[in-house]
Length: 291
Image 1 (tube, rainbow, N blue to C red):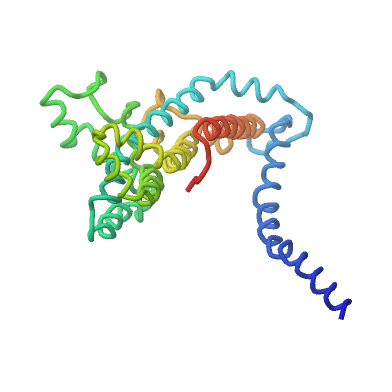
Image 2: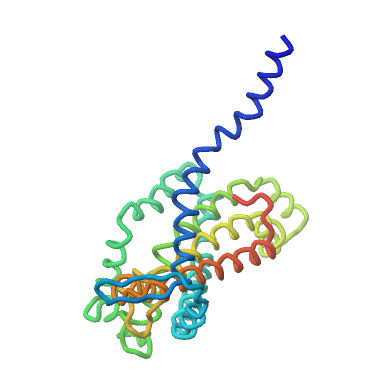
């Protein structure tokens, strides 16, 4: 009996590791192996021709300095666009998420469905649709021009604002949903208590709602900012050569120029910079009760 009990305890200890093994294998095959390959490529030297390039591993850290110095403007532009788009997403998504959580009543599911419905359309189709909306001969440009609200370029398409607008529209859903989940968790009696204590609406928002919604703000900001930095579709279709982002550079280096070490160095460097930024951001805001 003692042997059976010992064997049972051993199996119970091994079982969790066996259950997590498929996930570890998946991460190893689809994350660790590509990451190591990318790192190795970023430290290699390229040779051969553009039609048949060859790579030789050489611990060439100069690929990083060369790539980041050559494409510095695109890197800063990408982070700037992503930051502005994230801020706009937060400003636009918070009131909507608040209304859905507290004011929608029995129409809550309907409104959520209407919010999510457009995002069943392919990312590329949505971006091309915005290209049509912002076209020089479109209604929107004519309407804004008639009231003197066009940008200094005299158009909307192929401007920084078009790219930022595309980023905001395409990623705002990832801000709305985390905010909604955080706001829905707030007990309405807390707001009633703050009003009973003669708190004004702005004060209740700053002291009660905003701190409790901070997990949603944190999660939504990361879910919007990280993909927006590496996005290249919006800059490609809604921008111009003056609004090129680092994602466009990496795509071109991989597929057109075929400078694989430079492309890998940019990709890995961008990944590490974003990782450090996310760690600092989460440390500043805290990750307790993160949704």
